[in-house]
Length: 274
Picture 1: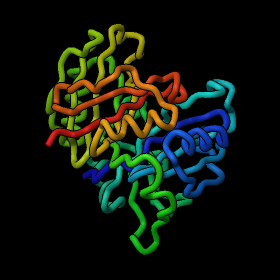
Picture 2: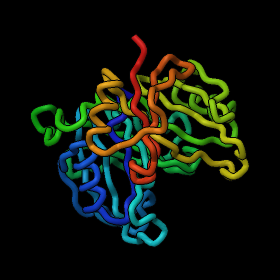
Picture 3: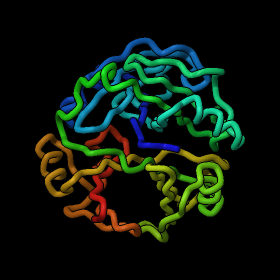
Picture 4: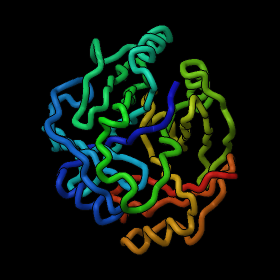
């Protein structure tokens, strides 16, 4: 069903500061934005901006009420999954027990049709279906510039029960559990592929603190050459948690950014296995 992850969305307390950070750190370019209506997913409304670097996109949202947000940080908000036919995907998802936050898709500032799943049916996390505009109508601003991130390999989630979370993705999205196990920090993780996308599920040391819900944890950015990507990011002021990547249980080379240099948000560079 899903072709790719179009973007990760973030809340921020200062939209202009977050845009400037992405421009400096990733060489990102703004592709559009504007007002965000009051909705289930953004209860107080707000303003947003879409940025591109390499072949990926990010959406930044400054909500109407920023009182609970860090002044100089990013808070993961949602994942956008691309489907070839959004109306067909909506009907298929309804048949699998999903509900949505509106009756029909809307079109955003980039011409993308989107519809959010109702979080009551997605373990209290936000995600939306996205149908991209036809190539001749697409806004291409920023594509191919800055740090050459090839794609988003996965979003990572903290989950209260790893086995239940794996089973949910297998049942709801015809997922395939491809690997996982103990992490270096002592928690457990699993990787599930569904369609052309992937999710990493992480059961933390104290899962009861999640209150039964899933929580967004990180994004994995794919580089064709992770070492060249590390050098490019270091030249822009980023630091990493180690000197060299480690290889995870599914053969991906991974290196996390030091959150002190990534606006407090967890991100890692990834090189996929051959």
